[in-house]
Length: 281
Image (tube, rainbow, N blue to C red):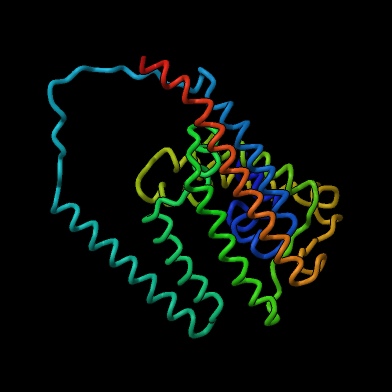
C-alpha cells in the first residue's frame, strides 16, 4: 500500500515531503496533508483488537543476564568498516568520471549513516502524534524543512531549477495510501531500509511489499497518469507568488503546521490527564 501510494504521489516522505516542500512544490503540501490524514486512519486501524497480540506475563526474581560475544562484535565491526570504506572509495572513483553519480553515492552513504545512527523515522513522526501524543519527531522535521527551504531558495536564485511535480489527485490519493500503509507496516521508505539492514526480519517483508506495490503502480502508470497526474499543472510557489512571496508562503504554512502540532499535543495530554489520574487512583 505504501509503495503504491508513494510512487503514485511521485515520491515518498523524502521526495514528496521533506525535500518537496523546501523546493516550493505545491504537490508536496497536498501529499503532506493527505499523508497526515492517512496516518490517522492507519493509527485507528492498527488499534483494532485483531492487531493486538496477547502478551503472556511471567513473574521472575531476577533479570536475564545479557549475553555478549565480544569477538563476534569485533569481527562484524571490522567487516562493516571494510564495506563502508569500500563504498567511499567506489564513490570517489565514480566521481572522477561521473561527478553527479559519484556525489549521489557519497551523499547516499552519509544519509544512510545519519538516519541509522539517529533512528530517524517519518512513520513515528505521524503515528506517535496520534497514538501517544509525542511530537518531537514531527517538530524536528518541520524545523529541518524550514532550514532547508532557505538553502534551496538561495540555489534557485542562482539558477538551479527546483524539482516541481504535478499538483493533481495523484498527490492526495498517494498521500492517503502512503500514510495508511506506513503506519500499518510500521515503517516508511527510510525506516524499513536501515532497520532491515540492522537485521530486523519484519522489515524485510515490509521492503518486499514496498517493491511489489511500486512495481504494480509502474505497470499501470500509463493508464493512471493522464487523469491523476500528467494532465495537471506543476505549480511552483516561487512562480505563483514571486520569489519572496513563495518563500513567505512556505514559511507561513510551516509555522501553521508547527502550531497545529503543538495544539494537538496540548489537547492530547489535556484529554489524557483525567484518565491517567483515574488509573493511578
